[in-house]
Length: 80
Image (cartoon, one colour):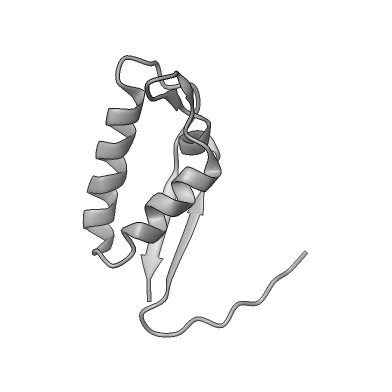
C-alpha cells in the first residue's frame, strides 16, 4: 500500500524497528511497549534531533539496566 503525507516545515518523521519497544527492563522486567515509546518521542519532539538521540539512548540504558538487548534497535528521525 502506498501512502502520501503532506509535510510542512518544522514537521518531524520517525521510522523505527520494533526493537526499542520490545526491549525488556524496568522494575518488573517487562517490555518497553510501543505506547511508551510513542509518548517518549512526543514528549521530547521540541528538542533537536541530536538531543532526542541522547534522551532515547539514556532512557533505553536506564530501562535495560542489567538486561541483555534482545533485538536490533533502529530509530530514524528527521525534521523538515
